[in-house]
Length: 248
Image (cartoon, rainbow, N blue to C red):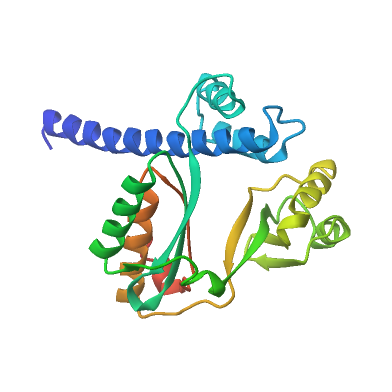
């Protein structure tokens, strides 16, 4: 490969990585803003904010960006009037999809989300059309190498967790949303650091599709997740080993 072409290819890939990094920073900034708005700007007393900051630091988000987002959340700096919305719909194979969104322009976001669904073989539905297929739960993902199952059960269940599951190299702790903060505090005091901690939509049952339909659903999920206003995408798609093997 010629040197110029090689450099052009590297520059192109770097541009893609930088663009994705910029979108990730934007999503994390909004997450920090909402957390600070709801519980104040002190991460020592606002655990939701602390985990938002931890996520931002984990991907090397600049300190100035984090501090600016906190100040926008507390009102010390002017910023967009963000509102939290939920969009629901169906993907290929009748797979249920829920999107958590933060936007400063409801009409723009509504049109763009609908367009993404339709372009990728899905249909955006009305509020509640798939929500009944999910349970809203507090979730914690924990590296199984860092804690024994007995120790985790003793800490989490005592603090009010509903269930603990082992999935490969990870434990998942599930709580009622009202118990989420209490379990967060207990894990923190026990020096157990979750890889992820959030209030999430957990499917009551997963839908298994054939490989080609599954790949189309993943393409729709990726397109939704790539849209700036979308914070999180949930689905009840069952990720089979064959489907997992096709994921980058």
